[in-house]
Length: 596
Image (cartoon, rainbow, N blue to C red; front, side, top):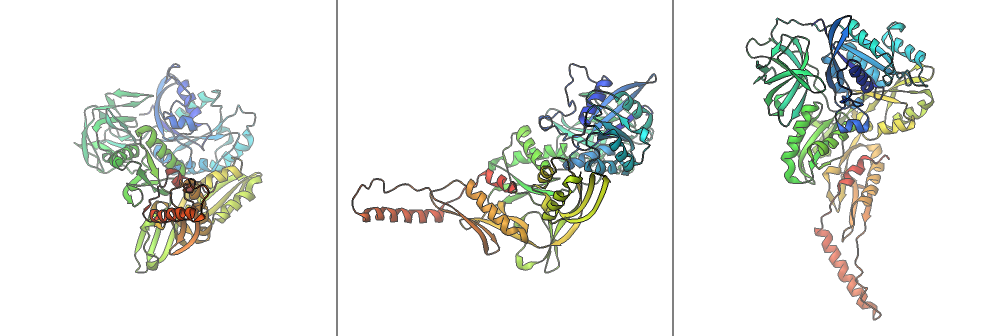
């Protein structure tokens, strides 16, 4: 146990976590040069294409220090705000953390947010200044920021370049000397915390765990504490780049267990593994249940693929515990699922993974947040989508979720950032200059306002400099209305939205204009209307495709032409009464991009 070190890397997105992990793995010769590739821990194609880490990855390294061999378990973490739940799970399995800060950009919002999580869990923090080889590096300025943030001595901040490998040896020495060994009782009953799980189509579900007390051997009869399911430990082992089987794992080890589990719901991240004989008294204090910020409906394009979609989402949930889902149905789209996500990027990634990993074609509805409705009878109802809203006459108060947004930006862009937040119904709470040209502003804002395009617009107005982090602060009363979209007088429930009264008219007009471009022309006129209750607030018409019925009339009396046109007009009218309008998937997606 004294020679085990469990640590994670925490940083803002694009500060060089994955590159630093690559250098640590190379320096300890964990992987042969032939198997090595950049971003070696990012094994999803999506991660490589976008250059972001989506999943936290664990790997074991062996490091020789002063003639002794140490086992280092590294858990790489994502940096984007939408994947902060992955970070909290990684932190729960570690005793130390490398705080990586980009020397060219300084401390960003997500760095601070992840750092506080690590401090709450009492992790030893090792500050690392990365990208020192860059001509634009500002080591003195950024060191001042780190000292202000965590109060460490200036000389403790390590200067490295993950790209060139300078200073990586010093980091490995610091991990061995500063990060404490795991504490636990090897003689106590087995307690192991599950911090992740993956689905393998040949071996069933593989759970990753960290042993807090006791030990486990191959063939042991174990049970999962919360689900009370019992299994044989068919194979246990440690996590190299590939899984390496072991006969026995002791207290402090990080490893995996394969026991032929078939059903996804039997494995819960945060659960405790213990022996059936001589089990532990209580489960380990897991991490808090994730609270989705954003809800959207996911429906199969082909109605008979509903069960396949359920199986696919269940397998994805294993790998991403922050995804939640419940079945629902829609008049326009049939049967599907109402899914909870942590943000818009999270939703986009899930959609992409469903397509790539499970070959599922899905339609996603307009995302929205959950509201609390207090009726005139005093009942409180949680509303996740506009179609679940009670009648307007029985609503007393609607409350919407609010967040505290922390934005760090260059002082040059402060005015435009504040204007953007105020346009999104934000209230300025605090403004602090971290240095002469870097400022942190805090806003209270409705969550619904940041769901669509806030992050993209923030990045564009600050030329990519501003960083953004948020957390929920509760519900507040709001003046909201239900905006319905009607096609030929029929409500399309998948396009309905709950929206602030002040934005409803503008939003309704934009949606009608966008749908007019996207809905293909039919043989009859299609009326597209936006309505609040019985009041129509915007209207567009998709004109009919008309056959030129008078083409064959050459010369002759005008009454012949008129007779043909009247006949056509009657046919069009009858067709409109029974005609169905097909809404293409691009129309649902276009609603998300209305701000562009």
